[in-house]
Amino acid sequence: MSFKSIINQKKAKDIIAGQILSGKIPHAYLFLGPDGVGRKKMALELAKTLNCHHPNTPIALGTSPAAVLTEPCDHCLSCKKIDTATHPDVQTIDFEWQARRENKELEKQRSIKIETIRAVQHEISLKPTEGRWKVFIIDPAEKITLDAANCLLKTLEEPPRWTMLILLARHKENLPATIVSRTQSVPFGPLPEKDIVAWLILNGGLSNDDAHEIARLSEGSLTTALKLVADKTTVSEPLLSRVIRPDAATADLLRISQEYAKTSDAFLDKLLAEAKQQFRREPHRFAPMVAEILRTRQLISKNVSSLMALDALLLNLNQRGT
Ligand SMILES: [Zn+2]
Image (tube, rainbow, N blue to C red; front, top):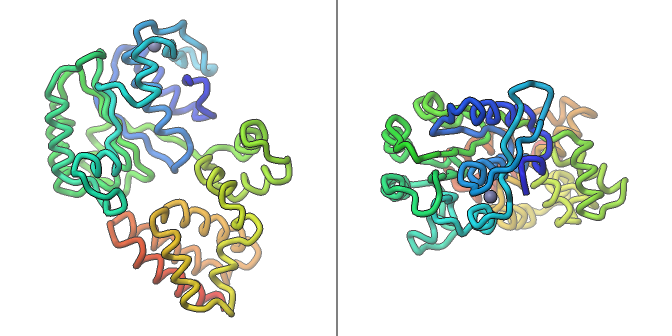
């Protein structure tokens, strides 16, 4: 793994490279963009670069003179520990981390709580044990509660010199302005369809036709593309048609909603991609459906139960579609 292995995202690489080169590395980044486009991978590669025992020769990333990024060596103990998520100074603070810490079920995690942020702040106050930098990746930052966000401000204002916080979020509109203004935003765009096609053919062993079909539905997200590959029914029978079929029984719709409640983000991505495709053919019929899906995504980002939100959405779409 290395920066070179991150598909596209030249703008993000340029921003980070420029800051590493100038030695003005901020203590808090906000990586903004859709799921599955390389935000987490970039955060981990940055953590490796900051802590690598033998940083490699710089590599040119683009045409801009500042676009040079020191590659991590990928072989030292620090790089290997980060790659295997065992480095004590580099941690991803997500629902899994929180569930482990609280000894609770992962499925019950709905938000990143103030207790979690306090625990992170305690960790941050201690010097690194092995590396030069302590790196905390908070994912997804949209799920930080307001209390927890206010608590985090203190650290963003006066971070210990060895600290790097990297917040991953889809849209900055879902975060308090105070957090956004105290972090360095780095934009990540959807991946070009041709890059996803190439990746699926090369690494997924897909035929040219299948790779194009999936890339078209993936909306520039490699994660969505991989889920689509895994969920073959989606390719043969689009989700949206299952939902808006006139003969779909309420029980079937609620079963679909139950099935996808835990992966509601990816489910809504798929549904939205399909609705947008149909919208190009029948704008009047599908525009309200696109709006409904977007509204549901917003509700879930504000911690409304994903099962309830999906139940309401699917029943609503079925009524509109028939
Ligand atoms: Zn290394």
